[in-house]
Figure: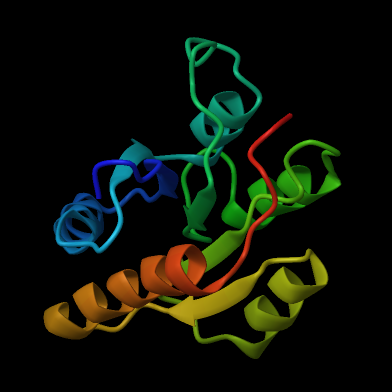
Length: 147
C-alpha cells in the first residue's frame, strides 16, 4: 500500500450516524482513502466548484450522495455535477433511504452511476459502503483525475 495513490471520496450526507458508519467502513478499506464530508447540497456544490471556503478542496475520485439533503436537494446537486464539463466524469453513487421508483428513474436520467438504498441493519450498511469502494477502486478503471 505504500505506493498506492490515496483515493479522495466526497461524502454528501446530513445524518451524523451514517457519516460515522461510512467513515468506519472506509477505515477498514483495501485502499487508502481520504474522506471529506459535507452535510448539505449547497456545501457539496461549493466544495466541487471550489468556492465559499472550499477553494483548496481536492477533486474527489468518487462522490457518495444522499438525496434528501438540507438547503439543496441531492437531485439538484447531481444535475449540476453531471451538467459540468469537468465534474461529469466523477462517479456519483446515490446512497439514500429512498426506495422510490421515481427517485431511481430520475437519478439515472440525471446520469447517476448507481443507486443504492441504505440498509437499515448497521452491519449491512458497513458492507454496502465497503462494497461501493471495492467496486469503484479495485474493479472499475476510471479516467485520470485531471480537470
